[in-house]
Image (cartoon, rainbow, N blue to C red; front, side, top):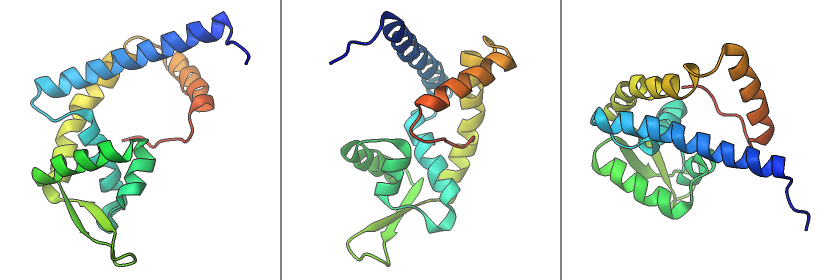
Length: 150
């Protein structure tokens, strides 16, 4: 097995550290504003994008790269607050479809300004537009799939 170069290890360490710092900024902002964790926003965003058709849980899992066991509990918590609803899947009687509710859509919209402020603090205030374009291009090479903007 080939060992990663020192440069690769340094890049990895900085990538993980930058991710942790950025997520901490966003999570802290959401908590201070009285909102649920960022994972709730991510689920609600995907459901909002899906519209009334909703998504099957495995589709949410795939889009968010979450493990199934964690997603099930997360969906349970969000549903208990009334932000999503589940219904039987017409194509598969054993399956479910998950859809955002009106209150879930409202919550996601109210969370966005706090999330956006976190992005601003974590990245936009520290990098130029050119830096951000370069960073985006580099990260695209490492990402399994492109994600859309909020």
